[in-house]
Each structure stands twice: as C-alpha cells, then as structure tokens.
Length: 478
Image 1 (cartoon, rainbow, N blue to C red):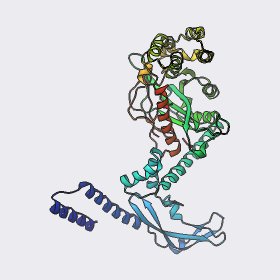
Image 2 (spheres, rainbow, N blue to C red):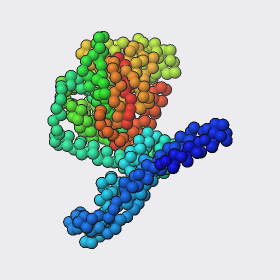
Image 3 (cartoon, rainbow, N blue to C red):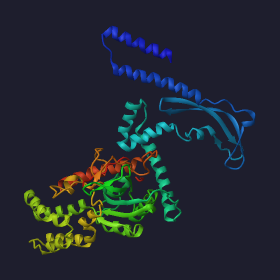
Image 4 (spheres, one colour):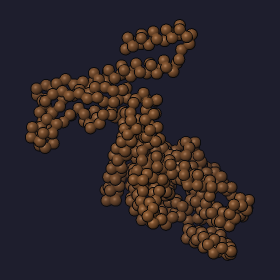
C-alpha cells in the first residue's frame, strides 16, 4: 500500500509542478482505484484456501454417499473492491459424480460470480432506474464494470426470492398458522387499497378490450398500512411516526387480499382496537374488506370522491374551466359535509340534452348512493379519523383541481407531505418486504412498474393516472 501511495503522491506533485494546478477529480478517482486494488489483494488472500488436512478430506454428499477432496480450484469473483480470486477445495462424489465447493456456500457465492455486496448494489440500482442506467451508476459510483444484462438478472433473481418468501408467509396466513404478535394495543389501525393500470412489456401483455389487440397495461394492486395513536389540538388525526409500510403486486383481487391480510397480521392486526379500511369505492375493495377485515370502519377516500365530482364538472362543462370551478365550489360542500342523499337527489334531477351524458351522471349518482355510509366525513372526523390521503389542495377546502392520492402518487417525490390529518415525522417508506428496522433489498420489477405507474397517473390526472412486492411516498392533507 505504501508503494501505491508514494506513486500517487509522485504523480500529484509532478502534475502541480508541470501545470501549476491539479485535477482533483482525477486524483481522487486514482486514490480510489489504488485503495480498491489493495482491498482486492487483501480479499484474494482471505479467499485463498489451503488444501484440507487429511481428516477433513471427505464430506457428505446430498446423494447419501461421501464426496472426496480432489484439488484446489480457482475462479474470479466480482466484489465491491473489484475482481478477486477465490481459491477453494473441490470435492467429488464417485457415486453420483456431483462436485461441490463448500466454501462457495459459506461465502454465499454459489453459482454466481458476484459477491453479496455487489448483488445488493445491483438490486438497488436495478429497482431505481432502467437497467442500463444502473450499469452506468455502478461504473460511476462504485468503479465496477458490469453489463446491463447482469443488472437485470440480479434484480430479477432477488425479486423472485422475495416473492417466494412472501408466498410462504401468505400461505401460512391463509392456513391460520401465524405467530401471535405480542405488543402494546394499537388504538387505530388503517388499511388502504387501490389499483390502477401500468404499462408493461410485450411479454407481460394480456388480451385487450379490442378484439385481436393485446392490452398495453395491467392492473397493479397496492396496499398501505399505518397506525394512529392520537390527534392534534384541532382534532386532526396524527399518523404514528415510521408506521407506514406498503405492499403490492400484479395479481387477482383474491390473491391480493391474502397478501394484504398477511401484511396486516405482521403489522399487528390482532392488537388493533379499531380498524379502518380506506378505498376509492371500487367493489373489489369492499369485498376484500368484508372477507378479511369484517370489523373495520369503511371510508371512501375523500380525494377519490372529489375526483368523481370533478369528472361530473368536466362532463357538464367540457373545456370551460371557469364553470367547472364554479360548479365544484357550489356542490363539493355537500360531499365534504356528508350530505350524500342531497347530492344524489341533485344529480338525479339534472336533465342534460345528451342521453350519453345523462347515463354517465346516473352512474355517478349510483356511485355516491352506494357508498353513502362510507362518506359520512363529519362523523369520521368527530372520531378523529383520517378521511383521505390526497395533497392539501384537494382536502383542505373546495379544490381547484384533483391531486393524486397517496397510493396513486407514490414515488413521485421524496418530499415529506401531510396526510389527511397531520404528519409528525417522515414515514418509513418501503416497497414490500420492508418494515421499520429491517434490512431489505427491493425487487426491481414492481418498484420500477410502480414508479412508471405513478408518473402516468399524475399526467392523466392533470389533464382530466413483476412481480413481487421501495421506497415510495405517502401524500395527504388534513
């Protein structure tokens, strides 16, 4: 190491004498390279095994026979400090002719040329950006040369592992083979659900609505769980710090219900004094709520309900922003004050000239009528409950324009927002197998899909919005 340091210092002073200045970036990267080379030499020495002693030259073989030591074999391994040589004993079973490297299992590098540290880096860059961008990030930030395909394969493999672990937990939950979660009672336990379409690759496409043409999107279902212990001086709910976790997948409602139930149990559902389900009013959400959380209070997210009013305003006054806003200012108070029957009567009394518009208005009236008991917002607020999860413009008064809810605007920003209450600390944002205080490597497929989904959803909202369970954002207001 001393030799490398002296060489670097020699280059440093020579450049300064020659040019009168130094290129600090080049120098610091050269220092990093020298440190990596030294570290790689240290790791190579650590990973160089001697031949085993005579009494250690046999090992059990999975076939039931005995594998015998044959020789030392070497291979190259990419680590966080560069390429190193792993030299270890090789054992061969003369009965089944299967060889084994016990050291590979010990170091967690069996059937891979990547160290655990490098795999973690690849998982991080693979879930955060397109795979080729991940390759570039590895080169710039870690000084490691990898291929785009390596980033993809590593992220996919880790995602599959996480998915398998989650399926095991879900199966245990459905078989009621669950450990009892011990701890303090949870005053209020919230469960949110939502679903929306996300763009997928050609291999992931399914039959579309148009005959002979595949759908370009698939529905991802997302769930959010958080807790509440108290409220502020004005009576608005306060979300417990670091209590927010998310789960999601591209799967059927039945499968997602099982996933969400397992997550809720893991979070302490059995300790909840009061349970609250929040959704956008979709039938599948209330079906899952009745099946898995029958004792929960059901609330239609106020943001989503307001979205329906905005849809009506645009339907009645297409292209006329002024009249749309005026209509919202007049009729949104009925919704906010829980006067759903009055709102429904008004909607049914409308007589537009178009039969198509009339039909759409009646559909919206049916939506409000069906969910009337889930829209008693003053009553919920008197109980100090959250009633929505949208940005402050949409839930603090008559909204000028709908804004994305927490589950439909996640991952757009890392700015700490307010929920429909008041947040007192940044929530711990993760995308599935992620809980406060645990280590996690997020699978790339769903995380990238969710980020794409949120950008698309936001774009659509401003104008009128693989497989395994990242950090995403919760958005809201009081």
